[in-house]
Amino acid sequence: MDGAEDTGAELDQLARDWIALWQSELAALASDPEAVEAWTRLVSLWAASATAALGMMPRGGAAHEPPPARPFAPTGPSDESKARKWPCRAPAGAGPAA
Image 1 (tube, rainbow, N blue to C red):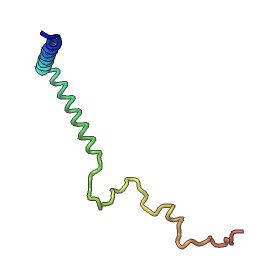
Image 2: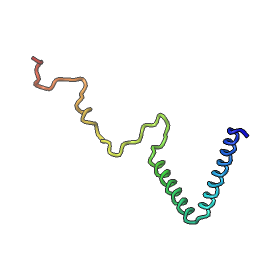
Image 3: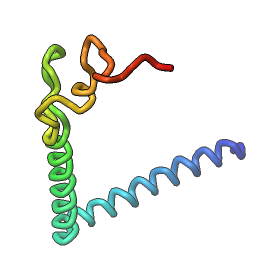
Image 4: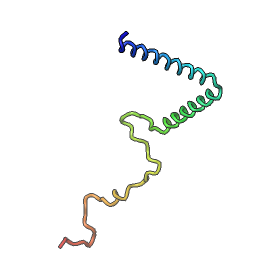
């Protein structure tokens, strides 16, 4: 036999052994009640986290709908809009700039 063929056959056997090892490990893990309970709790925690994260995401509305109101947005006109009066006039008593 050629050296390359020997290496290929050895790698194939090594791969089969490795898969058999992991299959037996996973079968043993699945038959362990404590491991099953731990994995069940972990998956439940992940599911609850995903549900909470989805609950915090904004809801998609139609493109023409305005965004929802901010919880602490000012209700009256802003100070900036109060300062702008149109047409612009100089304050009473103010003369031309020198």
